[in-house]
Length: 441
Image (cartoon, rainbow, N blue to C red; front, side):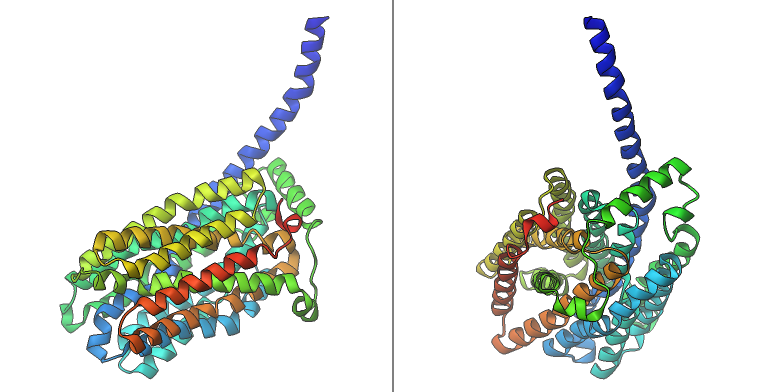
């Protein structure tokens, strides 16, 4: 009797375990195929977006730009981003990710390299604006693209891995940018900051071509998946879409207070994120590091801390199926790092505070996207994700512009850092206005 019972239990449990094992293997296969490549592309995007922070160390003296001019130029990128992001994501949904993401990368590579011709503030503003236009839609496009493959319950981990490209860009880009400016300054009668823009545009050019050869528009076109794997993935995505809230018109989006709330939350996250990336080299130099090479080396340390935090927080969020605390707590940690930084003067203490701020704010950036992607599906996701992102990314304009103005006004960085800390704290408080039952799945 006991043997019969054991056999019955085994017959009931084994097929389910096999099913779960097959599903886990399938998603691991998808993650291995897509995430590293998309991370590499975003690394190129982020490097071309924020290398202006390193170029600033030489460019301001060469071109006689003020901190305000730099802050305005760094931020005007996001005006172009704002104007073209939603149309870009809608086009991606219609024509496919492969062609559209390739177009984005190739365009911004050419524009990024064109910064070697900057001579005046107006030329700086125009190229930064055009870079924003060119890059508009890439990050939200990839976020949308991942919803074609991963259901909500698996998305936080996938997004965390993708957004690890940001700290990777800091780990690789910091020492690389410092080395380029240190070793090539004056080569062929060109300043180091010009070599920086020229050489760091090349990876994006190569990756733009690679997208056309490597990426698939969706599950149905993936030749590297078996029919059984395609069926599983498509069924899970379809089931997940049935649980989302549909927004089919601009009026629906404007009238949905939850999406505006999330736009406000992400505005605060982005404000902190770009407060860090655009001013990190300057903060380290003011702490006492003069050589661009060593500035680059030290900027890698905060990003190393972030790259450890991102996957751990993402896995915890998926395992517990809890989203709000996994977003709000990293935001508060980041705010504490920013607030403490002005109180310290040594290089070591500054690096510790910057590491805390970096881990918190970059983890927040990835965890945020578990909220809107849990609510939206289909074309509404294309427009909704892009709309939330483009409105929030206006913080990318205001953050460097306000911090640059405060730095010129006060002659030091304290006021700007406090402004960032208060804004990120406010965003963390807003997180708890999002209904838990809508996103905790």
